Image (cartoon, rainbow, N blue to C red; front, side, top):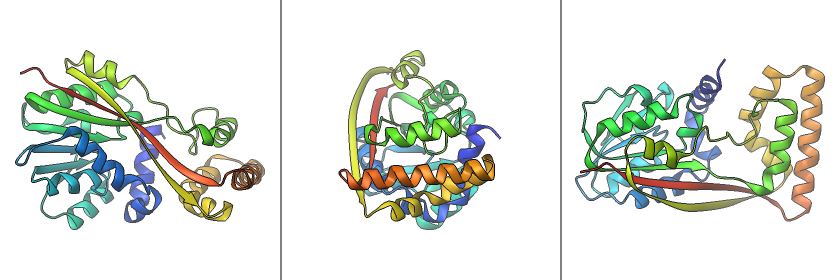
Length: 256
């Protein structure tokens, strides 16, 4: 199974409670739309829309919103939750829209989980009208979680399920190569306090247990759990367990 398929499976399995797991999603969706700054009546495409954090904010601004996601369960939930937008299941590397269909395209935490992010950026450029805006967010570093990243990389030589996915290419470079201009960036951050190690394991269990149980022998899985608990208890005793999400927002426009 490819890394992209693993991500898709996880999103499919956890669509109903995604926003409980990704506690930062609503806040960061609003920040991404604020960064794009679309005017009312803007034709806006939300790529990898998930449960609609960005889409809902765009609707509140008066935008005409189309949302796509590759995950069937996310598409179904979003269509039920936000009936005032058009929702379609679609792959961003093969957008089924005519050239110049949108004035703004946004994509939150999408590029880093794609096998071909350059193809996605090229498609975004194609469906944007001249002078249109793209706004992307990509995960940033989480310094206080280095212990978990190192632990995951020890048990899974490729980037593991508990590690931040590495951005496959510099988004600014991808945007420039696709012909976008006036590139700007902004760093954003959020933090959520977790009561203790048990709450942390419960929060991550759905993702962690799938990877641990399916990819490690029983003895190694037990060792991973032991090391995870030791790390979480150390973190709890030295400043507390804080789930921080850092991101870099990238904005650019198509030449008029």
